[in-house]
Length: 380
Image (tube, rainbow, N blue to C red; front, side, top):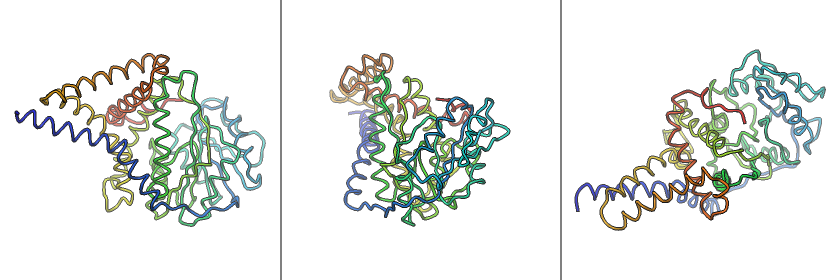
């Protein structure tokens, strides 16, 4: 056996192990630890004063309905406020948000500064100890805010994320595989929360103690990672309340979902550049979870490419079959992405298509991040 073939075999198994650990080994390990050592914070039925911040850009047609949805929450009216930040909107967003309810305030910024800077501006006007964040496109379940604030009765909890439930569209084949990934991701986050390892929230519904907020650098893509990490590094816990539900609709197409994932994954590279302490296990108290959950998934597509090349170079029938099986799997996944209606009728094809889409986005995330955050934003 040649040295090249031996080296190729080693590379193949190392890359396969990395992929298996990132997507199966780590989630299983966390699930087992969570069952054995996980803890749940104390909760209260009291409803403290709460401000819900909504950053909006050119949302004249949707902002009033979003405000009405928040105010319709099963939450004491006198304890609920809404602060809308019109981020330099070019339409009538600010006027549409001024619905005449004294609980609603509108902050109209003179120019578009981006979501991160808009949130910074909003927090200078928040007076309540608890502040929640959401986007325009989602809707809350009736008792979502009650469930979101309940864990703050525990003084160790500094931030709470809710759960985003994505409705399946008519064209299920395009995004069904990604939906499966999202369900697995939510389970992993819930297990991490029980261990005190949760380091991300969903931008659709999350809250924090106002005094723990630290200004977000302008242009930051992942404000929903920056804020919980600051909470963790202050010595507090990030919790996940699975009863605090926000509803959203699935992406209309595979292309839309791809760009959404590309933006998120590119944001992880940006966050690493802006928070280099993430790579320091002595400074990052959730280094193991962050490295296993976030960073390794950025490396998975490179491992997949190396595994494909290594199986082509290794000797022996097993590696020949492995090489052809990979090619067949990728070909099927691409067909599934191009023909979503067909994919929805074939077992496993949506999952394969979703896996390839996610890893293609991860593969392109580094150059996308280097190109700048302004190229990543798309309105949905």
